[in-house]
Image (cartoon, rainbow, N blue to C red; front, top):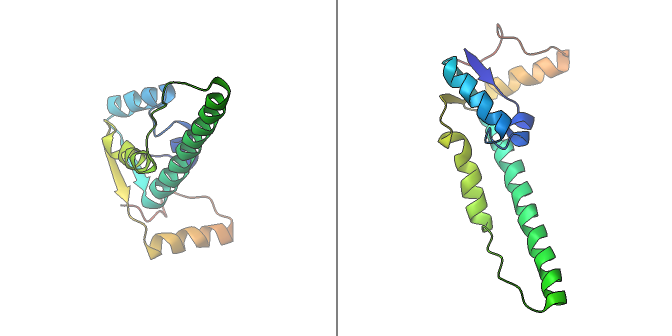
Length: 131
């Protein structure tokens, strides 16, 4: 069995590291399924989550700065750097304890998808270009 998640699922479940993601990983292992990750989905997920986490970090730093101005002295807040965030996010999918395969982005895949959009056709397992 092959399972494909779109970017919204990867993002909302924090790369399947949430509680619901843990249940999904359990199901995948029990059913001996493989997660198929289209390269374009992985890249979009990594960009969106990295950007979100960097914004959270910046919000915390700003809030800490405001508290510091009022209190005058506080313990230092240690947060991940932008590079650390990017590195961690890039490692989420490969480090999951589930079988997965990445489908590289190619012109044929893009063209097939674009034609389906033009024709307003849903994806079909009979016409997908995935191996």
